[in-house]
Image (tube, helix red, strand yellow):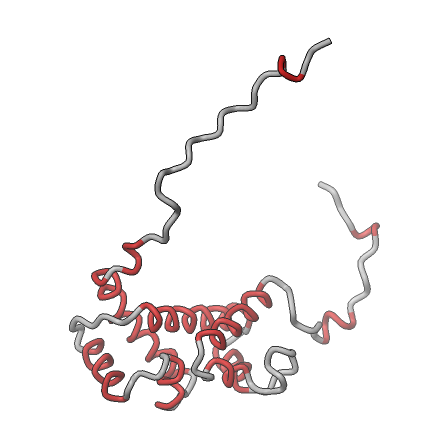
Length: 179
């Protein structure tokens, strides 16, 4: 009778690095943020123009920088001069880009996506308010919540069935085809 000790050993576990896992520090370095800041601001401005955001909404989305700081950033970005945004502001702009991209995927044309942002929504997350109210709440959490909602919708979650789905007959086992 073979004992448990006679079994072959499991493959060795690779050694654990001496340093704990860290975020890639280069991603947050000043040179990298400087490289990204100008293009990020120019793109944010283009999206904000498409969404017809007023100055106050833009400032709220960016985390409420002072007006002079905001216009200094814009001037530098437009003139392709060095500007270095903080991680928080770059994160907020990144989320706006993700929201805009998701709207483009979920809606047939840009005006429909923008209309979705501005119309009251029945999803519990929005509480009858337009999603734009959460986007312009001034918090990173509000921005991220809308982004997550749209990402989930892209994956087929959280949206009520539309008219085509409501009228469709349920699938049966006979509908499943194995190739």
